[in-house]
Image (tube, rainbow, N blue to C red; front, side, top):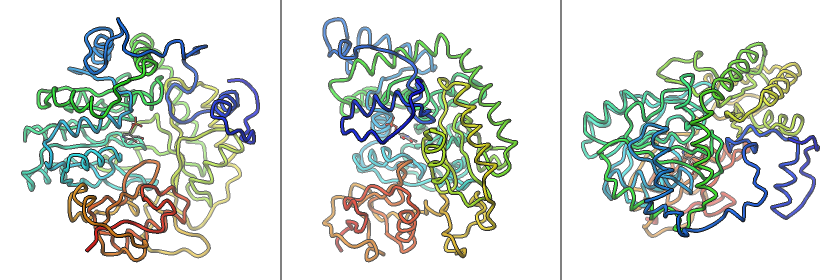
Length: 500
Ligand SMILES: Cc1ncc(COP(=O)(O)O)c(C=O)c1O
């Protein structure tokens, strides 16, 4: 990257100029996409942007170069068949859920699933039964318990498929091997949203990939952790429990009929790059990561999430490429740390939550990038003032407790409550509706989603009872500056509910 100083003051309304300015700044990307703006230098992208002309195949009916490219991806990941996705993992999740169980069927899904899984349930009129993940350090969601999967399948014979998010946005994985065995004992398909784990297959230092653990359908966002353009993703099929014709049908429903050749070229390049250079670059990258985690142990107040400090039930395994940075016993919140890293050190983090901020790293990060992050954290660590109140881990926080002088930070355990579904998502959305102020909506059935973004996991889904507690949580999330989205009233003052 060039040495031109980073500034957002340029105040240009032109998107191209703003992107150019950003790309020439000294701002280091600890965020998606995984290519870290370093991979390909095309002088003229327009000259490569075509449609399905002679010799260039058709993604929705591939027989030539796109068929070969998808086969190459399948070989790389060890899948039976792999499909290119040009609309992100979102399109893969919509298609996988739609093909894995019949319309109006029952889906067992982890509650901390991305909104696309909820949207699939809505589009197909599915009944949803939720698996609540364990609560972990830093207030993040932990693993889904295989015992809970077994219990739900035993109790509810109508369940027709299981959907698990592993890893989470925070890098926590679940025991997919054991869950797959349990699900397959009922001859049901297991879908794993491994959107954040497309790199797992390339080093044993990362959690075991869901495909090797027996998952039937696996979704990977190439763009999140590997060198590939934003929106590029893969859907892998690994079993006969899935109707491939139905899957292809839904892919053609949810994906554009004009897939971008630039995106498809980027996926092909990514796959070839990982085939050729993946193993050696991964080795260097893992060494960098380990060095960073080792150095970070010297910090007194700044804490990096490490699965060894929690039990396997809470965090089955951890993706160390996602560096979760907390400011432990200090007066600093995740948001303050995020802004300090950006404004003082020009390090753009992926996201922040109440207790931590996340640096997403990839094979394309440089040793200089890691050192810039470490130096910034070291300086921050030296200047931090220790507070007597905030534990930073969330583990000692009890909902509703008050500390004098500062508001208590919410943990994912506080935020993601056990939902009380009264009717399927789609049915609720189709009912006559009325709009109520959030405060007046207690006891009503929601017709809208309420998400925190990121990570896009619903606090409330349509069809669920709006309890006083969940309304208070939405209010607290807003007061703490978290990005609450999903309501049609963008001022987040009112909500549409089922008219009684
Ligand atoms: C867990 C999870 N799954 C799926 C998605 C959707 O991925 P994409 O942006 O590639 O559509 C996201 C997006 O952030 C996500 O966090």
